[in-house]
Image (cartoon, rainbow, N blue to C red; front, side):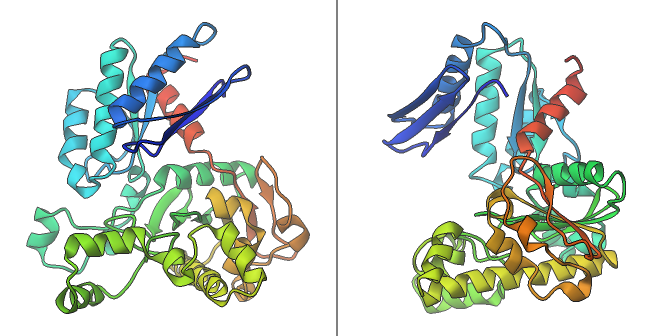
Length: 368
């Protein structure tokens, strides 16, 4: 990696822009009005520092590919139109992503772009797993089905586990645990089920998302309060999960600290998260008829021994046994944390989504 950075709090007066190379470590607070402004700032900064490494290609992460995109692809006008067409399925992400792609094409018209979709890896899920038991006309007209997300991350985990096990990884459970969390069942590199559904709200309880709840609870709240559908959507996405249960924060590190100081609600939030994770690990075990490998990734999965311990507590009967000495370590490279007598090999895999995107760019465009 030659340079890294981020634009955060876009649309607010105190947005931040960070940029880092071996010679530069810059952090600015300024108003970044929208994603077009943000990418203009990014590209301008990169172009000013590209003497040793000119920009040959651009890779974009796109949250939703709908039913169109089963693999990454090179951007053209048709691709952009399809990304915008399915934007109502992910309105907070796809519209912004399309505007960023357009800006890159305007500023660097000769530089090709590749789009990588978080949903593509899950396009192999069989109909028995992705179909919702709703009327055909609704499913077809509204494109209602399980799509799954975090696909770029799960694909990287699958590739890395295959390398680490020297080909012994045939039935893998990939646990992407962070502020957004999902678990996938992967057989011989092919995804067969995942916990997120039509949107990233489904599945596990998360930092601020409720995860799976009885759908009738939504209509019940609307019928018995002044909340409308938009209000409920905001509550379930932004005000639920660990934040709601703890009444304190969605940051797992702070919850662990508070629980160690006797905060009951923080402990309950952690216990619920661990319970949910174990439940879905068990579900994926059943989907594949057994497991030979399990991997943790993302913020909490990579950095929290406590979360990994909670996730597999009492799971020895299914073959999961952690070596606590190895689990307590922190490394920048993948490492094994399973005990010698564990039937399942257990790994921690630092997130590699940017690397996966770079590999796709190289695969589709060729060159070095």
